[in-house]
Image (cartoon, rainbow, N blue to C red; front, side):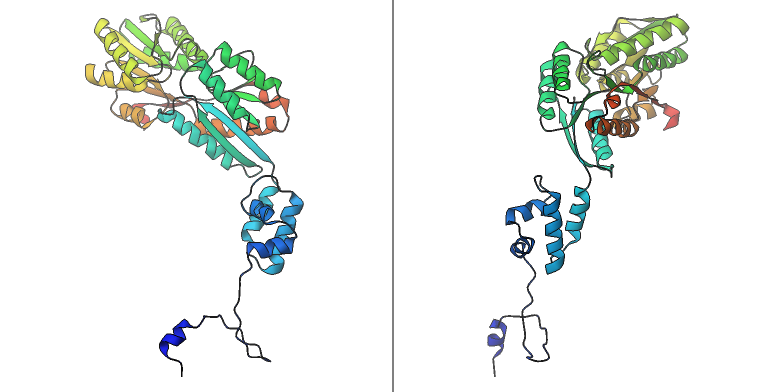
Length: 368
């Protein structure tokens, strides 16, 4: 009789009883090598099929799938791969800026969600951020991302260097879309974002409604190369001239879309103009204006209008430091953008023409 130790040393088998032979046999799952042999392809091809790597024909996928079913190799993943392979691959490239800002991080997530939500294509999303607001950094990222994608969109600034880069991509047949800011007016044909003149007029309406006494109004822009910011300033000025002549709009202050510059400039404005009635931050850097007003003025004393709803602007609304947030409907914008980018990637030239304006979302302290 075998002892317990001897019994434990014996190889373990799963049993299958044969009526004739009563043999105990070991059942073995098919391996990748078995699958490759059954499909009549190499191991490398099977690996590419299973890991959805490029360079595999539909015939090879069909062969591997049929072999998997024949030899009992798990086929659930292969069925999904086969289904996925029937959809066209579209590679999307995006160049945004300011990854440190919550709005642009939210924008990147919304783009990825819009791409992954399309069931008619296999979407690949490459979102990059320019290292700075330098035109050469934007141009460099645009050129780089275009090498590995089918269609490109960017929120770049207006500058001849950026326009030249976009023109070069278009000459190679690469569709390019502009986001939020018409980066290359006259070169780029398609824009997705808000009507920036209208956004500026909404800001003016809020300041004029809140501020009945005469006084000063300040506006911050990211820089003189931000076409969208200039249009917002124009809208603000036109509204105040038409409907609030008691308010005097100062020349725009460039804040480079940074918190610290905006903070220091806001404190300086408050110090020099006791009659400051309103501030509109037309681009980034609103956090600096919020911090300065928290320190120097009671809530509601100065009407502060900012763009985009973030955790900080939401809290400032709740505290009544901010009077109005004018926000871009990112989910709606991204879905519409991706639809047009897909058509452009398919060769539809009408998809890259026209201005696509979305209705801004307005948030007041009472709407949260």
